[in-house]
Length: 249
Ligand code: PTJ
Image 1: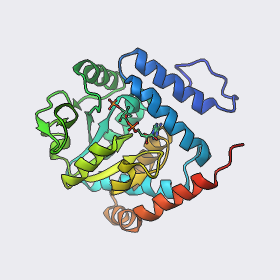
Image 2: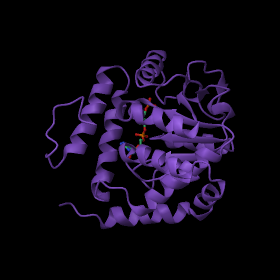
Image 3: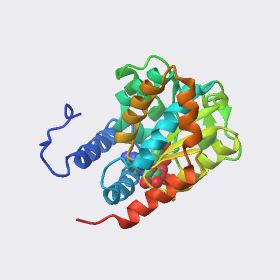
Image 4: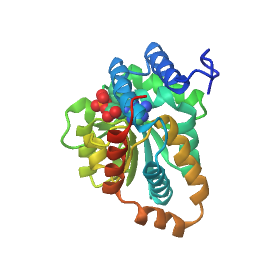
């Protein structure tokens, strides 16, 4: 993970500095929006209180998410400017292991940024990247934010949306899709409307979902069990309690 930045791994805030650097570099490359910097800052504050670790209830959510992706008819991993900057190769690997499509889907949509993110994912090994056709619409949203590929998110039964705006998360849920949301704020609207809210840093969440998918692949009973035993409300309550009890040392 340290190939792109000169940071001492011994630094106590190594992961956090690396993450910031990637978001900054994402803005410089035209991948991440400037609002992405603000979103990252907000996420970091929650992560600090969570202890910058994957709590047990988030690990359960990551296992359930892996099971949903594997058992879907058509799963799509939605990629925005923050996700692409932070975990490009890890997203490609997750899509490969679960058979999901990758679709670039932006809140602050511009054609330049869509192209730049698709190129960046291809540089990291993606062969097919959706999001450029934009011939489908999410009902109930204004024009630019509503654009999706009709044969991508438009046709998906399961969608993984990292760091999503609440409005769009709600609108996607209303389309009847199973929504898997990664968000460090357990009380964000996106987390609250998700079938599976994953309260974890995307940097840890994506590789861990992939690891669970490798473990669950080819075992429909274990997939069903991971889905059935996951309880979204108690995962949200557990994350909120952990954050509230978190210390500021
Ligand atoms: O690239 P675009 O145009 O699609 O825009 C992406 C952002 C993230 C800028 C856009 O969707 C946005 O403005 O989102 P919000 O409303 O700021 O919400 C982002 C949520 O992600 C917040 O609840 C943050 O706590 C959370 N978050 C930020 N960084 C991380 C995170 N969650 C997990 N891992 C992170 N690294």
